[in-house]
Every structure is written in C-alpha cells, then in structure tokens.
Length: 202
Image (cartoon, rainbow, N blue to C red; front, side, top):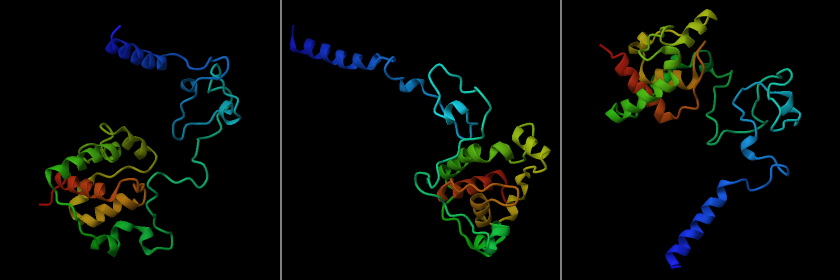
C-alpha cells in the first residue's frame, strides 16, 4: 500500500471518529440532548430544580416566569449608558439641546443607505412597517400595540427633526417607545440617513 493511500485511510479514520457517540449515553447524557433555552422563555420546574433528563418534558408542571440574566452579568462589548432619571434629558431626550446640537458624521452614501435600510428592516419595521406608516396590516405588532393603547406613530414627521434628534430618539427612546442602545453609534446614523430617503425634506 502506497504512502498516499495510508495517509488517506488515516484521515478518514480520524474524521469518521467524530461521527459516532464518543461516550455511552448510559454513562453520560449527550450535549445535543439538552434543552434549548430561548431568551425570556418561561422556566419549567424540571429545569429550575435540575430534574431535567433527556426523556422529561420541559412543559411538565406550572411555568415559573421567564429566564433572566444572572446577576451582575454584562453583554459582550459592555452596555451603552442610559439616561439617569435626574438628568434634564430624561423626560424627552430627542428634544434636548444636546440632541439638537448633534451633527451627523456619516455621509448618506449608497453603502450607508443600504446599511440603514437593512437595520431599519430589523429594528424599526416591526412597529413602523417598511414604509414608515405603521400600518397594522403590514406590521401586526403595530395593531397589537394600538389595542394596548400605545400605537406606533407614522414617521411622516421625520422631516421636521434634525438628524441629532432622530439619532437620540433611537438611542434613548421616548415616551411609549423603547430605547435601542444595542444599535451601535454608526448604525444609528445609517438608520437616520435611510429615514431621510423614506421621508425626504422638501
């Protein structure tokens, strides 16, 4: 048998060894059999009390509320500081002098607009719809929020605001709109640039 043939057989043996169970499941449960936990998913007593096994049902017993991050954990990359309640900006950040003074550092290039459109589709369209008009038909979440007394408003007022005001609204939110600190600074500006395309100034 030639050396290339021996090498090929050895490689196949190594690769193939990863395709079967490494440890008998009678000794240890397999990692692939553990429950998949989603953010804010209701907890099951079987999981809460460490009683889960590969044959148990996650839904056994009453649910005990959503999973929450362990105390003092911080997302990778840190947390964008939020406005303290005693800050004068807290009541309505986008109308603060600081927001009005912000200047958009990113030119509305085709690349910026494409990025902004993509991000708008991820973070904004769910409530405001793809055209910014918050139609409950296109954005069902808008209908549910409206039924709860907090309807998303159409973005037709965008031309009346300065770029810095829109940026601040995305970062800190406003009454009845959540903040989006998880969107990076540059990406907020890309969204602002795209909003100028959706609702151009006359």
